[in-house]
Image (tube, rainbow, N blue to C red; front, top):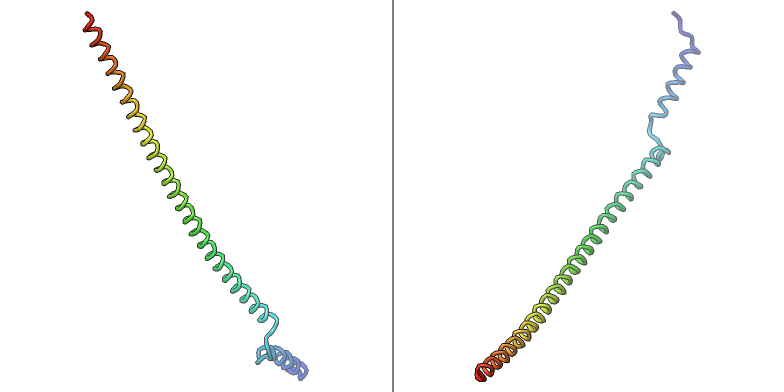
Length: 118
């Protein structure tokens, strides 16, 4: 089996061409540049998500604080309203007791006057 010189030359040329792609490259190729850009975009997106999470945490804290303050204010107002109502009820009860006492006194006096006339 005889291999021609042309076939060997062609095989050497193909191998040399193929191996030239495996050697040291000057700079970076388009795929490597694209990969770096993807990495940078992913890093920026991760940072943006982190910042959004921090902003959400702050907003949640502020909302909870405001809700707590509103609840505390509502409880204070309710307590004040209950105190005022209790005070007014006590005053009304004292007035009613005084009036009842005076009415009982007048009734007692009338009963004594009627008893004296008999």
